Amino acid sequence: MIFFFGTRASKIKDRKISRTTCSYCETKDSFIVSTFSKYFHFFWIPIIPLFKTNVAECSHCKKTYAQHQFTPEMKAALHKENEINPAKRPIWQGIGCILLVGFFLLTFGLSLIGVYYGSNKKPKNLTNKDPRMELLENDIKKISPVLKGDKDSVSIALKDCIDYDIQSGIDTDKIEYFSVIQENRILVLLGIKDLKGIKPSERKVIIDVVEDCLSAMPYLDGVHQRYISIEGKWNTVLVKTPTDEDLGGRFADKYKLLPFYGEKPVVKDSIPTKVDTIPM
Ligand SMILES: [Zn+2]
Image (tube, rainbow, N blue to C red; front, side):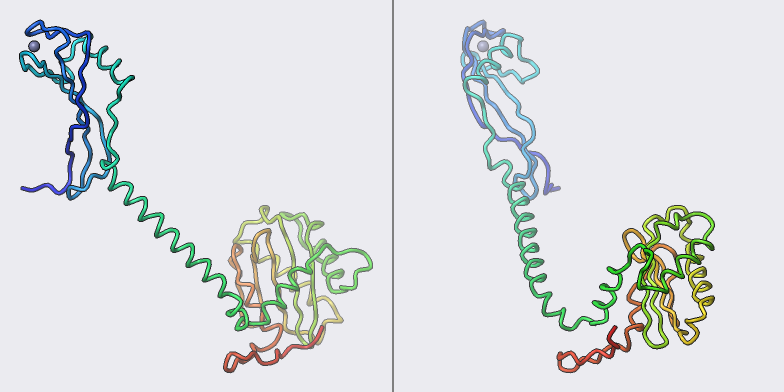
C-alpha cells in the first residue's frame, strides 16, 4: 500500500564532536554526528518541517548511537557544537507550506483588487437607485429632539401625547421626532436609541401609541395614510405603512416607507425619469 502523505527524514549535516569517548572501543573524539530533519509530506511535497534527530557513529569501531543512547558527555558536546555550527533545516522542507501561504495571499490579494474595482463601479449603479431612498435618508437625518417653538407641530403634539401614554420601559425625554405631511400622507419618524427596557416582541406597542396619538389630532382629519417608523440606535426597528409592516421589533425594512414619497419612478434605457414627488 502506498501512502501519499506522512513523514520523511533527510540528513542535513555531519559534524565531528570533540571531548567524547566511545564507550564501546574507548577511542577519544571519534564521533561523527549526523543530524536528520523530519518533515511532513503530501504526495512527496514537503509541507511542514517537524523535529530534528541525531545519530552518532564512532569512526573507529563504526558503532552507531541513536539520540536516546547519547551519554551526558556526548549531549554536552553536541550542545556546544550546535552553538558554534548549528544544523539548520533547509528551506525546501517547508516549500509546500510557503506555496500554500503564497497561494492564499495571491487569492486574497486578487479578491481585494476585485472588491476595489467592484466598489469603483458603484457610482454607475447609483444612477439606477431609487431616488426615493435618498429622500428617506435625508428625512431620517432630520430626526431630532422636540424643542419649544419647533416648526414641526405634529411632533410637538405627538411628544406631549407619547410622554403621557408610554408609562414605562423608555425614557420618553430622549425620544427624537420628525414628521412631514404630503397631501393625505403623513410620515412619522421616531428615534429611540435606548429600547432595552422593552422586549422586542412588545415594541410594536410604540406604533400603537403613535397611531392612537395621531388619531386624536383633529387637524390630521384628512391625512389617512400613515407611514410610521421607529429608528433604534443602529437600525430601523419597527415600520408600519398603510400596506405593509415590519413589527418584529428587531430589524425592520425602512424602505417599506418609500411609497410615502410617491410611486417608484420608471427607469427607461437607464435614463432616470422625473420623480413623482411633491416638493416639501
Ligand atoms: Zn568506537
